[in-house]
Length: 208
Image (cartoon, rainbow, N blue to C red; front, side, top):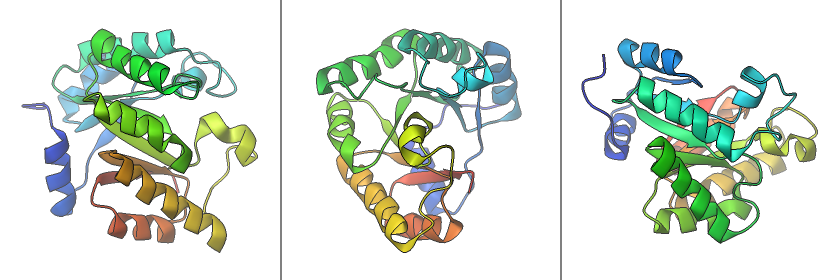
């Protein structure tokens, strides 16, 4: 069982020591409780709950309230584990003010340790605003399900030279905006390796 909750600095030290961060996605109390007992370093409560819990075809229908409810349940199940709440569609695209308010809801109502939002260069103002508000942000690039319509479906990203350059540019911009970590999803391992070497923030890959 986890003895104490990790901090962003613990994750940074783990990256520097080339240690693997062990994490899981969870949406309910019991899964989170089992994860904590198993010694998980981190739990992500993603808006993928729309597909995994509610049977939606994608993440777009997921609301802030649903994300808060599930994040709160996960927090109760894993009080000693670092938990990240995923911000759903339109919770950070409308305005900077609404972005910060919604990020704050995750902390005040669900007790998360950080929030995650998807997007590259264009979401850097939102990331900066949340960080300025005293909260931690995990970025998410590559395949971002909320933008699957623009991406042509749930497809791997960064597979051409130009696309790879854009993914790398997104990663660098997100770190510059203040994100403490980065999720790189469905991107070729060669591109992930470049991102790993260029970034100082903690990062991980989900699905290549």
